[in-house]
Structures are given as C-alpha cells and as structure tokens.
Length: 178
Image (tube, rainbow, N blue to C red; front, side):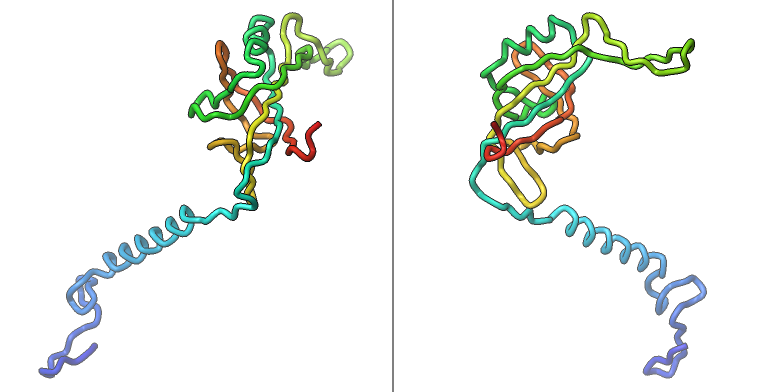
C-alpha cells in the first residue's frame, strides 16, 4: 500500500487488477508484448545486406526438370539465345545458353529379386537448361535481377512456348565457368 499527500491509503494494485486504480495489468502486458513484436519485426525486416561488389559478374547456372516429352524439349530448344523469366513473378533470370537431354529414370520394386531397379522411362527425359545471367554478389546471396540463385533452390522457369518447375543444380561464376 502507498499513501497519498492527503494521507489516504492507495493500493498499488486494486481489487480489479488495475495499477494505481488507473490501468489494468493485462493492458500493460499487451502493450509490452506489442512493443517487443514491433522491435523484433523492425530488426528482422530491416537488415542491411552487405554487398561484396556493386558491379555485376557474368555467371552460368544450370536448372533441371524431369519427366519431360520430346515436344517439351523442342519448345525449350527454340529458346536458345533468348531471355528466360521466373514463371511466377516474371523476373528476368537470364539468357538460355544450351539445353542438354538425358533419359529419365525411375525406380521400381522388383519383388522377385527383392531389389529396387533403376528403369528408363521410354519417351521421357531429364532436361538440363544452362542459363547465363549478370549476377550481383553479396555476403550471402547471388542474384540475377530480382531472382536469388542457389543450388538446390526450386525455380519456375518460362520462355516463349514453355514453362516448367526446375531445380538449380549448378552455379558457376564467370571466373569458374568454361
């Protein structure tokens, strides 16, 4: 209990849970939690990225898509030397350099032998698209335009007459590329 100037006794927390009879303790806790969330959000979303070099560096990266048909491959090959884009956000992601094709394989259980066999899927192919882009390098990222480029990242790619979901399987900076 506290005493006022007039000599009246005032409880710090009254029967209704209010501090000095004015504001609820719950309200104070809610305000403190909101302040903490605002501070956290500011620090999380306002990170300054350290740019290693303001200049762009030529780079090559390869994306893979699987289980494709000959018709799809023909559409992709028509884009050699042309611009490619992120199929979801429409960001420029570079220029198509080449398209390599390998047979597509799947794995099937062989119940007679008790093994798992690698089986070629007739008429289906794995397609590797090599893309050249001008990259900006930072401490933690490589970006071409607005698109981050990282091995293992899924990337929706589109060009004239095709669109597909791919995985980035190889990244080469210009000094490494051959």
